[in-house]
Amino acid sequence: MSSDPRPAPGHPAAVLPLPPMKWDAWGDPALAKPLSEEIRTLLAQVFGISGQDAEAPTADQVVLRPSALSAEDLAALAEIVGASYVSAADADRLPRAGGKSTLDLLRRRDREAQDAPDAVVLPGSEDEIAAVLALCARRRIAVVPFGGGTSVVGGVDPVRADFPAVISLDLRRFDALHSLDETSGEAVLGAGLTGPRAEELLAERGYELGHYPQSFRYATIGGFAATRSSGQDSAGYGRFDEMVRGLRVVTPAGVLDLGRAPASAAGPDLRELFLGSEGVLGVITAVRLRVHPAPAVRVHEAWSFPDFATGAAALRAVEQRGTGPTVIRLSDEAETAVNLAMTEQIGGTQVTGGCLAVTVFEGTEEQVTARHRLTREVLLAAGGDSLGAGPAEAWEHGRFNAPYLRDSLLSAGALCETLETATDWARLPELKTAVTAALQQALEKSGSTSLVLCHLSHVYPTGASLYFTVVAAQQGDPIAQWSAVKAAASDAIMAGGGTITHHHAVGTDHRPWMNQEVGDLGVAILRAVKSTVDPAGILNPGKLIP
Image 1: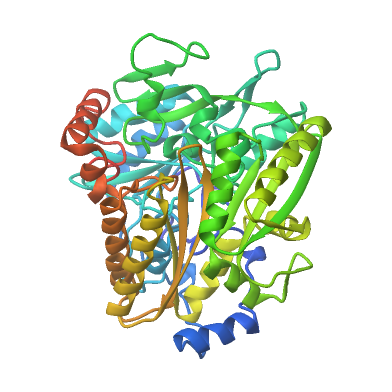
Image 2 (image 1 turned 135 degrees about the horizontal axis):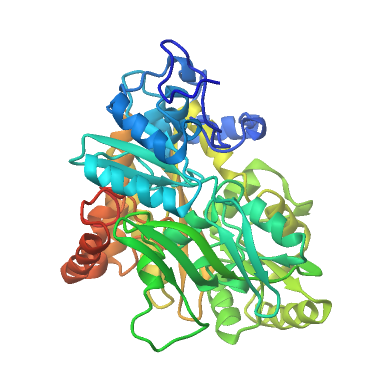
C-alpha cells in the first residue's frame, strides 16, 4: 500500500479501514432484506406505489467533488498522524460523506457531483488530535469528528461554511477499555469503541453498560456522549448522559478532563457543555461511565391496551410508581395495525388490534421477580391484557433492524423517515395529535397520502418521548418534499411545547429551531463558549448553534 495519502489517478481503492456500514444504506449489506409481498401489496393499495425498484448508482459511478486540499496540506496532516492514517481517496471520502438519514441516503443516489470531506484523518492519540486541530485552525480547514456515522440529523455532514476545505476526523483508533473500577462500578471507554465492542470488553469482566439505541451495532461511545443518546433500556439504566461520570475532550484551546466525583457543588457541571455538543465544542476521546454486573435473568412480557390513551396512562402509572422495568414502550393503534398487516402473529401470539406494549425486566432473579410482579399489577389495574412473552421477545430480536426496511422502502419509491420529540404527560395527547396532523397535511400538500405511526419509546415520571414513523409516496424531488414535511412537523413540535429532539440530536436538520428551544440568550451563551474553546470556529461548522 502506498504511503502517499493522495489517491493514484483512476485508483478507487480505499487506503484506510472503512466504516462498517454500506456507503449508501444502513448497516451490514448482508442483513438487508427485500420487501415482502405483504408490504408491496400495502404500498400499492395505500400509496399507489408499484413497479420496479429504482436503480441506484454504484460507488464507482458516484462522482465526488475533487478534494480542495493541497499536496502540502495532506503532507502536513500525514506528518502528524502518519501517512497510513490520512487519505484523500474517493473510496475513503465517500463513506464519510454524511450520516444515515433519509435525506443523506437520497443525496447518495444523486448522479451529479456530490460533496464529501476533502480528506479523512485517523488520529491515534490526544496529542495528535490537538496537533491536527492546531494545523487546521492555521490553515482554515474545517474538522468534522466522525464516530460510527449513524447520525440521522446531518450531524456528520461535511459542511464547509466559510472554510475552503473540510476533513473527517475518524476516531476509530480510540478503541480501548482503559480501566474498570469494580468497586465504584465505573469503566473508562475510548470514544471510538462501537456499542457491541464496548459490551464485549465489559462482558469479559462480567459487566454491562446497557445502552442499546437502534444505532447500537455501529454507533460509538463518543457519539453516544456527543448526541445525548437514549437507549431502548433507558427505563432501567437511564439515558447515556445519566451514565456519564466523566469525559476527556480535546479542544483547539486545550484539553479538558471533566468529572471529579459522583456529585459536586463546585459550580455549573461543565460535563453538560460537552454532552450533546455534537463535536462543535471539542473532540471527545474517552468517557468514564457507570456500569453494572451483567444481568443474570431476563424476563419478557407484552401487553395489549384498547387504545393509546389507556396505554399511555398505564405506562405513566408504572413510571411514577417506580416499579422498575428495564424496557417499557407502547405502540399506537396505527403502528400496531401495520405490524399486524405484515404478519398474522407477533412472536407467535395472535394480536387482534388495540395498542401493543412491551416490557422487559433484567437483574438478579429476586429483582426481576419483584419488579415484574409490581409492574404486572399496575398494568392489569390500568386495563392491560397480557399477551405473554412472545411479542416482547420478537420485538427484542428485531429491534435493531428497522432501518433496513426504511432503505428498501426508499428503493421502492416510498418516502420513509422518523422523527421524535418529548414533552410532559399533560401535553402528550395534544402534541401527538398536532404533530400527526402537521405531517399528514404537509404530505397531502405534496401530493401523497400518508401513514403516520407513533410509539412511546422512553418514559419518565413527568413525561415521555413520542417517536413517529412516516411513510408516503415520493413526489417530485423527494429531498424537497421531506424537508418541507419535516419543517411543518418541527413547527408543530415547538408550538405544542415539545423539545425539537429527544435523542436524535440537533445537527443541521434541527438547528433552525434552536432559538426557540433555548432562546436568543441561550444561543448567545453557546456562541460564547464556542468562541472560547474553538476561536477559529473549525469544529463541525453549521451544526447545533445557529
